[in-house]
Image (cartoon, rainbow, N blue to C red; front, side):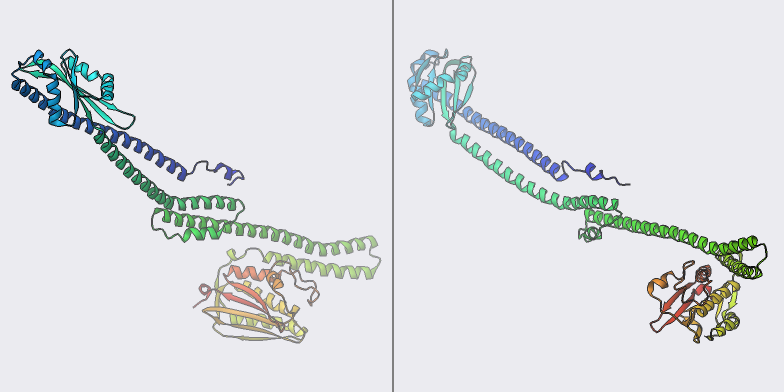
Length: 509
């Protein structure tokens, strides 16, 4: 059961596409940050490892140079000789490398000699952590990143000769190029990763759109179908769009199955609507039947009651009134009795009688002979034309009543001095009969209603006004009992034909 506010309850505040898009952006953002931090960390580690290896080489070479210089100058391997040769040490080491500037300190940290520029000397005074470690007898270096994008390294090492610490040498080295190479490497990695992320995002987004578009279409169709079902309607165009899905994956299968399901629901709704209409028609038909029965029974009863009251009031003095009253009472009571009999004939008697083979040729010939007298009264003639092997399984008296009613109906509504033709034969493996007379042309609406109880197409055209209009409805009921069909056709030249068709299983071999 659907409610009017059901569409509001299904309002989507944040769709799947938006959720997945936000989720992908969050994943890519977190992945980008993680990649940046890992890249930065790894490049920093590689840079420090490379600097450490180079400083290890510089330390070993420096100690060799110092020992050789002491030997060449016939100096002792002590602190005093180191202090005296500090200028020579600066020139020798700088001249051999040409890459580094340096300063020589006593082992207590007193500057003895250097070839540092003034700005380097000032900067070095701010980066003395490594020097303090060297005073303690430890090798150490300090990385200094400048705002201009330069990387400077301050490396302090105690000089050990003959296992004695005789002084400190502090190097100043420019690793800007190495740092810039790392930054370029990082930029390349990040740009490549960004391009991969963007490409992956758009590919995933396109794939997601391809997956979600049918789902969104299903959602739209579901919402529209809910609104249509509230009105007991089904939009076949929407169902056709789902059925036409060319996808061969689960989404396409879902669309087709969903379309089939909605189509089946639509068929059930249409069937329910048809059943509803049939029930309403049945109720209306029963009410009309009741009203007609009441009216038809009321008319003769009113006449009988009226004449009876007049006779009672007269006291039997007026013989003419008595004779006329008795005649009307007898006529109306006979008509009432006939009507009651016809109503009883409409009751279900089929279940109380057994079916048996019936020779329809003999039956129709017998009925025609009996009805010929009434037909001759109006100048009509009954002509028969049928085969002799027309055997039907049924109830003979009920089938006899069908032809009595049809022939009687043809006599009452046919033109004077015409021929009533009765035909019987085989039609596509079934037995078919027809009763045709020359009469009033009937339109489609009349043909659809003539089998309803108490319906009469034209009372003024009938030769017998006392007819209750139950004969054709009784014929239809009897044909239903025999699983057969009955219908009427009217031709432009004025011929009216009633057809009877019996199903194959009702035919006796």
